[in-house]
Length: 355
Image 1 (cartoon, one colour):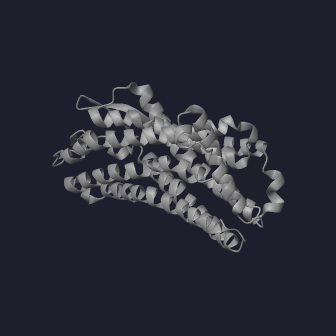
Image 2 (cartoon, rainbow, N blue to C red):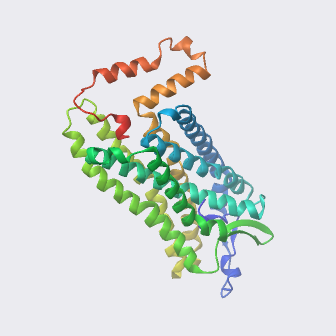
Image 3 (cartoon, rainbow, N blue to C red):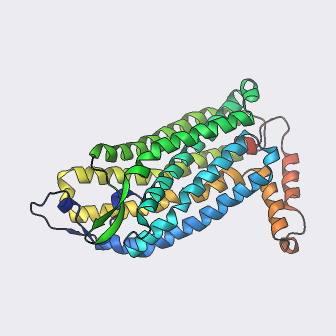
C-alpha cells in the first residue's frame, strides 16, 4: 500500500501536525475512506488468494522437479517467491483499510512495509534477469551456454535478493506506528523529505523506467531473430513477448504517474485543495489494485505458457486430484507432446526457453 494514502480514515490532519496551522481546516477524505473500507479489502483479498495459489503452484512444481532445474527454472522459482513475499503483506493492509487503524503493533508495521517493498523490487529485478537471460541465450547462444550453470544462477539470485533488501531498508526502518487523533496509523513518513523523495525515485526509476527500458531494448533485438527462425512457434512466442512488456507497462505505469502527481500536489500551492487531494487519493488506491494484480499474472505469463511446465502441472494435478481422470482420461501431457512433435525441428529454441 502506498504510504501517501495510508491515512484515509476521514480527516487529514497532516498539516496540523507539521505545524502549518495558518488558516487550518482539515480535509474530509470521506470518499477515499469509504472506497478504502469497502472495495480495497475485497480487491486485496482477491489478489492475495489468486497470487498465493498461482505462485505456490509454480513453486511446488519447480521444487518437485528440482533435479531437472536450469537457469530459467531458477529465475521462475525466485520470481514466484518474490510474488509470494509481496502478497503476504496484502492481508495486513486489507484489514488496515477495512477497520481504519493499525492493530498489529509497531514491529509488524516495520516488517510488513519492508516485505511489501522487498517483494516488489525483487519481483521486478527477477523479471529483468529473465529478460537478460533470454537475450544472451538467443543472441549469444554459443558463447554463454557454458556459463549458464546452477551455481551462476544461485549467485545471481543472491545478488538480486541482497540488492532488493538494500533498496527496501528505509521501509523496514522508517515506517512506524503513529498516533494521530487517538488513531494508530502505520506510515512511512520520515522527518526528512529526502527519504520521501528517495522512495518516489526508487519506485519510478528503479521499479519502472529502467526495467521497462531493458525489456524494450532486449526484446526489440530478440523479436527480429525469432521472426527469421524457421519455426511454427515463432508467432506465438513473439505475441507472448509483446504481452509481457504490455502487461508490465499497463500494470505499473498508472500507479507511478498518479504517485508523481500526488507528490507534486503536496509540494505545490494546491496542497490544501481538499477535492484534488481526495481524488488523487482514490486514484492511488485504484491504480494500486491494478498494479498489485500483476503478481497474479506472472505465473500465467512466465510459467503456464511453457509446454514443459504445463506437462508438469498436468501430472501433479492428476496426482493430487485423481478425480480429474474421470473428465480427462487421457494425460494432458500427450497433447503437448503431439504439438511439440508437429513443430519444426530446425530451431533449437522452444517457447519454454524463450519464456
